[in-house]
Image (cartoon, rainbow, N blue to C red; front, side, top):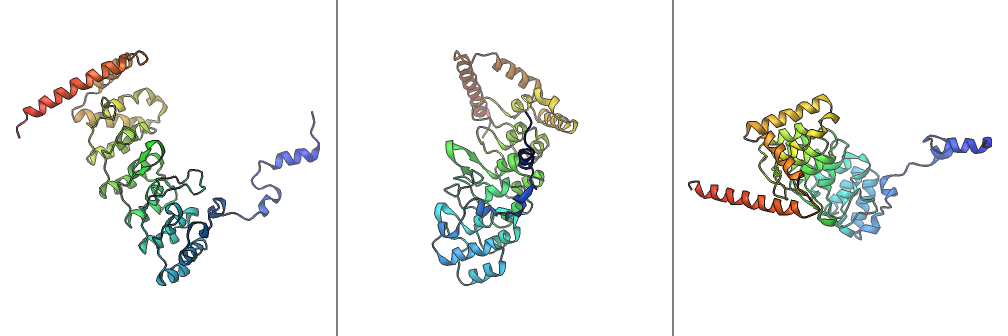
Length: 312
C-alpha cells in the first residue's frame, strides 16, 4: 500500500525532535511539567514569594525576602521545602545559596509531588543529591550539613542511605563521593536489603574497585547478609560466572578484590564450594531452609564457643 504524500510527510515528522511547529512551543520548566505551584504547597506569602524568586533564578530577590524574615526551612504540604523547590532544572547557584543560608537538606518528605517517583515518600534532598548526575549538588549538600547516614525508607520497607544511593545512581566520580561520605562518618557496614555497601558495589554491575576502596577504608568483609549465611567472599564468588561480560579493567578489579580477601583470611575456593553445596539443596521441598537453618545454628554455636575461650 502506498501512503499519500501528505500522510507520509506527517509520519516522517512525528519522531523528529526538531520537526515543524514543535520548535515554536516554549520550553517548559520542571516546575511546570510537575505542576508545582507555590500556593498549592505553602500558605505563607513570604515563602510563596521565595519560591517564585527561586523559579526566576533571582538571587537578589531571594536574599531580600530572607532578610525580611522569609523562612528558608519552611515546610509546606507533604514537607515540601524551598530547598527542594530549588532542586530541579540544574540551576546550582539558587540551590547553593539556600544551603549557605541555613536550609536543611535532611527533611524527610511525605509525598512524590507529581514527579512520577523521581521524588518519593521518605526521600530527602540529601538522598536525591546522591542520585543526581549534574555536578555540584552532592558537594553543596555535604558542605552544608548533609547527613551521611540519613535513611530513605519508603514503600515495602525499601531503605537506602547515601552510600547505597551513590553506588547505584551516583553519576560521575563515584569514588570521590564515597570517599567524602566515609570521611563524614558514613556507616560502611549498614545492611540495605540484606547486604552491605561493599556487597552492593560488587553486585551492582561489578564495581569491584569501589568495593576494594571501601574495604581498604575499614569496611568489615566478615559481615553476613540478613540471610545469615553469605559473606562478602560468597557474593564475590557468585560474580565469577559474569566475568566474561566485563571489560579487562573490570576483570582486573575482580581479581584484585579476591586477592585482598584471601590476604585477609578468606578462602575463595571454600566459598565456591559453599555455593555449590547450597545450590544442590532443593528449595521447593523445604530442604534448603532445613539444611541452612542447621548450618547457621552450628556456625553460631561454634562462634559462641570460640568467643567464650578468648581472654577478657
